[in-house]
Amino acid sequence: MENPDLVKECMDSCEKCAKECIKNANLCLEEGMEDCARKCMECASACNRVVNEGLINTNVVEDCINACIACAESCESHDNDHCQECADVCRTCAETCEMVY
Image 1 (cartoon, helix red, strand yellow):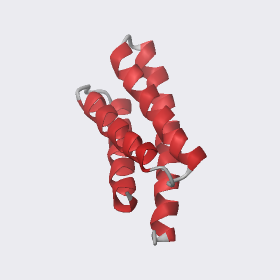
Image 2 (image 1 turned 120 degrees about the vertical axis):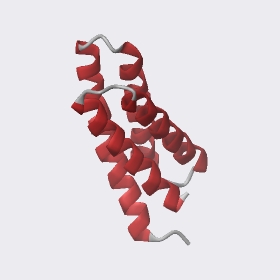
Image 3 (image 1 turned 180 degrees about the vertical axis):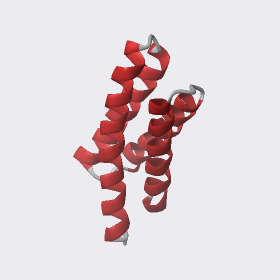
């Protein structure tokens, strides 16, 4: 049986990550960083799927974890603060969801 506190933490982390990624994607687009913006939007979409569908489907959770890692790696390659903040939120989300996966 899944730990309800960990499930809630994962869901909350996904919601926070989706919002951060959307915010960051818009900033990246303003700066001409289309690839980073795309990774952020893919991550936001994957996180929102977890929020909307829950943790029943392990493929959805796995997709979210992978998208968070990919987004974090993309954001970490940029020196600006908003990408670094997004990378941190994505890493936290991936780690949190891995605990219930």
